Length: 348
Image (cartoon, rainbow, N blue to C red; front, side, top):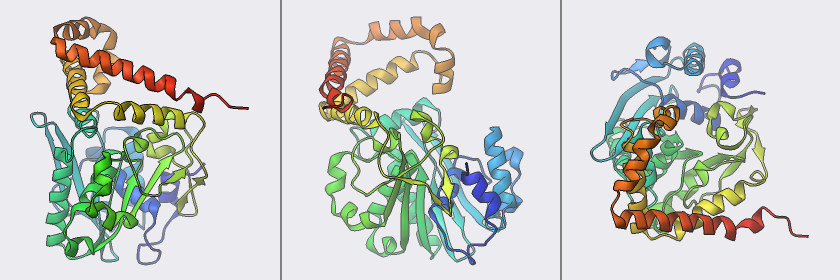
């Protein structure tokens, strides 16, 4: 089964010889997860060991920098900014293509609690700090570099790309070729009715794997494509699992069995709560998680049993109002599960 690693190995045509495609977008989107120099650098001049710690990322970057298609692409304006105080996790990088276009790439969520807290905040807040930063970044880059451009990202990065693209002024947005959201979450409902969104939505291309959870969160109006993955469930969010054929993803007709139920449960559950109720619940949840004195979800998952006493004490210390909202939220989730059971049980 072929994925974007295979594509990197087999496609030796330059961007001048073969036009940009959606698999290229995923590659540039995923590159944003790596760490780069802050000075303009050709991809072929990068050092694999300094850019990534994970083995699969090292293999990915190795194929990028040895690819005839990618090696002469230049990266610039790399930025990484995590601010615990304002709950912001943001990173972006710009790639200058040999065909005189550019791709502005936004990183998705990392494993930090700050990054995940900002994601959860999207359920009641617009814009979150990373969305503001994304818009500022695109405005800065497009004024400095007068090229037509693509914007994209994977996961939260896709959401940032859509937000930034929708909120650019008319002169800058006219240079957008396409906005790519690779399994990126949607927005609160009000955003989709704005003229900014309506004016740009035809340039948005969104793909989600068949068992997408992240990409189906909140509201999305763009006509998304469903793609095939070699994984199952939440693991389908991993771009390494997305199957590629003829410079495109393998397209499916519908979402996987059961995922419609999961997505409707989550979204109905969120809709049953006011914005204030969502905010109180999310703040309470992360107060409890921070009580473990761990800073990433990876650390929490590995040490969860050991940290149970800290978590129970943190829950006990919550004030009556927060406890009330947590209980109400749990009841709302159970109600949503029961209400949507008909999506799981076939009717004959």
